[in-house]
Length: 186
Length: 186
View 1 (tube, rainbow over the protein chains, first blue to last red):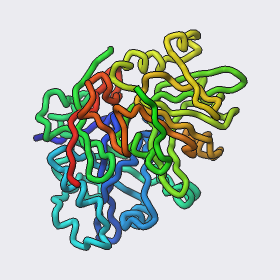
View 2 (cartoon, each protein chain N blue to C red; view 1 turned 90 degrees about the horizontal axis):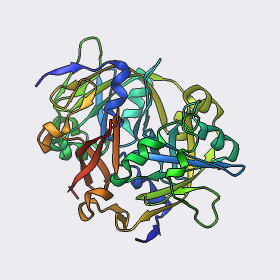
View 3 (tube, each protein chain N blue to C red; view 1 turned 90 degrees about the vertical axis):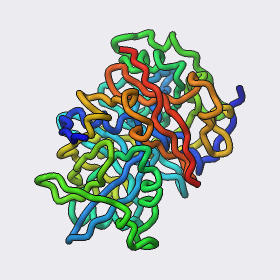
């Protein structure tokens, strides 16, 4: 398994098909990870941007606001139970991170969850009105990487990987769908 | 095929798994429809909201800004060519809507595309800074409906329909994936 950089202007393609994500952040040495379905591409050039929705009760929110950075990771089917576990609040499950294996990429002090399909590191573009009124945060994508078995040359390769490496798409109440068959109309 | 209302507070579930959409709008009798992958739930209660990203060059954008309303529809696999066609600009393909069959729901002057899986009617929440700086529009969900074969009782039923009724998830360059297998961790 090799993790390869994804060009910034193509990073939106990691999100375009609507996968469920996990958001991570760190401030003053405290790391956290939360599951999030409401993450969306916002632009690819000249500034690559994305939006995330993070409730005021989320522990991760203050880490993002204080540090000015967050990371998005795109988990795969074999991590479905982990995604459910990271959907619980750290306040209710103080040791929830014990289930995770985290790693760091050079140059960024942001914890990343191992064994995901892809990762995007974002710098918060402060928009206090959006954050307060809508729980909506905008990030500039500073770097991105993907597991080259699953995403390479700017495209997902789901038809070439086992089901356990397909992305997860959450509905509600523990119900997910995996991404399915590809079609190409080019 | 029966179209049934979806309770407003559950309408986010139509978008939660990240389907590619088509956005429609109407002003002064002029209708338009555009394909859009960057549509995301923003809240479910007390006010159900979603975000859409619409470029300044999109013809639909002025219809939304002038009328204050738009609709989101969630197309299915058999409509993939239609989704590609609606991704072209009306400026380049003036008669692109000739390919579509539109209908209206009582009480809303918004064209809806037939044979989709679901529809959401939204009232624009004006946020001029977001619209200008980020091409980001926020809508309040006023009504929603779904094809009850595909979405019923607050949940998608993709495992019970043929592939042609699965939602589409666009990547880039004509590459889509259909939504796939369900898993339930409840």
